[in-house]
Length: 112
Length: 117
Image 1 (cartoon, each protein chain N blue to C red):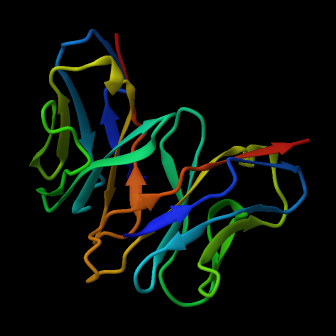
Image 2: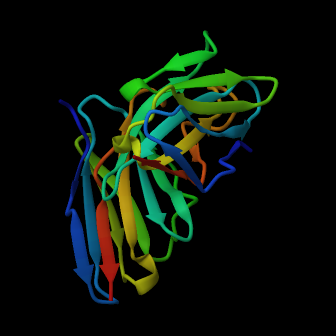
Image 3: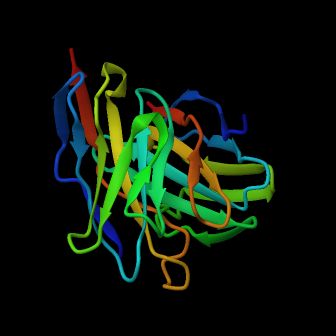
């Protein structure tokens, strides 16, 4: 049963610390998406990749957030430095040829 | 730019009754439309999609959705609700290929479905 995996599932950190979230897309999928979900803003697209190349990161605060795909089996989302307003659930999703996206279980981040 | 609207924050229905969760969309050209469900503390799960063909699309867990081009709607339905269907439901839309929207999905704000005994 292929699925998207994300680590860590939960992260508590202090303001100013670096946070790295990892995602393993479904094998063979060529598009990877990062979303953030909060009660106030709902589900927001932060960035997405196709064939490991970044296509759109317009939803991401550039000064502190960065997203990369070092290889086809790993996508990372980093926040440096983290702030309390970054507290949210971060989801990774993958897809093939841009149709159905399959979501991971999310990383629940709390920045104190 | 593409957009979707889910006009109801919450829908309450009794178990065994039919349910409808509403969604309207705005997109250039013919839309790709999706429904996802999110259970507490879980990621979004794909339910069904419409790309082309029959206006009535059948999906997982007995759900179906009806595409109505004239009303620009894609309402989610189920003939008989279960308590276990209680969850947050998201409608999403993307532009078809070649229209400049890329692979991005635009999600609605979500509708909380509560099914009671």
